[in-house]
Amino acid sequence: MAQVTVIDHPLVRHKLSLMRDRERSTGEFRTLLREIALLLAYEVTRDLPVELVDIETPLQAMKAPKISGKKLVFASILRAGNGLVDGMLDLVPSARVAHVGLYRDHDTLEAVQYFFKAPGDLGDRLVIAVDPMLATGNSVVAAVDLLKQAGAKDLRFLCLLAAPEGITRFTEAHPDVPLFTAAIDERLNDKGYIVPGLGDAGDRLYGTK
Ligand code: URA
Image (cartoon, rainbow, N blue to C red; front, side, top):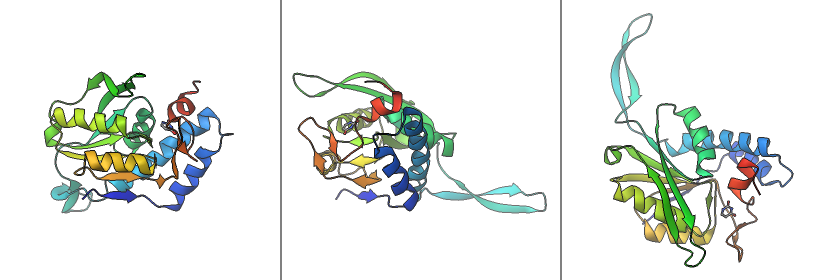
């Protein structure tokens, strides 16, 4: 059974409301995405295992908890995923970063890969795939397919906003991958946009359009 977690925190809700506002400037939107990403990363990593290691404080030796295992991988689904990854790296600077580039074929509406670069030992690491918007789910399903083909076994998916249609598509395709989102909106419109949503996350992040 797929696990879906809504990260419900007053700061996350507040910042998301600011981001939804069409009057928000590109710079403000980018800053807010970075800030909210840090809060979301905090929740997504809440259950990471720790191990006790020997350290010395200025006063005495002690056993102190540190996150165990290999460094995390944040997998950015281009291009808007980069906006989330930037904030997550503020919190976990040692994380490795994978990039997955996909575009939508206008005829088939299928996601087509144009770029993929990831650490070689994905199978030994927790991989957190990120894309701000879970709309139809086609891109993220394809991205997680590619990450699994590259060896990833321990995966999570983090987004900012999800449509119910995207959640169904994703959890049916990848029931083994826990999904985290800051909010679940009403629906998709006939152009595949989340409503009420926040518009095109990539355009708002980079000032394109
Ligand atoms: N991608 C976006 O950036 N926004 C949407 O509403 C849907 C997909």
